[in-house]
Length: 254
Image (cartoon, rainbow, N blue to C red):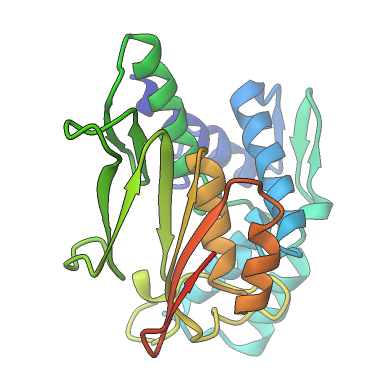
């Protein structure tokens, strides 16, 4: 029930969701505390990532999807003109978009929902367990008394090549190649400044944090950043850990 409630807020694919209504009309009256909290988290990660995490990138994503990964320059220019998280007006009364703008929370909402489900289960007495709602959260200790063993891989169905041990923390992993546009080789994580797909620096980036939402947003942004920029961003979050692997198989651990 909680997952369905939050999908009715943040889903791009449900015509009746609050986000779909906002994108269709440009305004959402009385957005409610969950939507406002998610926007606040998005702003924090937007600033920490020097603008690379930007929920207003949806017009660009749409341009790529419609052109199966190969939009023409006119479509790119039009999409880029509509992008800008700073152009989004957020208040307790309403959220308002500029003409042509649209939002996506696909880079953070799964983590946010994971956190909400963890809170709900803990309130009902959960002392230890794993919660997987798009991202993975570990609650308490595993049956061995140690942290829960979580395997990391480039894609969800790949065999794990790295294991991390978590207790009362969450992990989120992003990969530019996780979703491709049609037959094109460009990935689904797009640079809001250049309009281009993420550069081929990272095979994947995993972020560990007590908040699955923050881990989710930081991992999304990291795919667009250099190693030094990932390090600088992670240091702005006191307990964030990075487990990244580049295209040559070299690992970055922070």
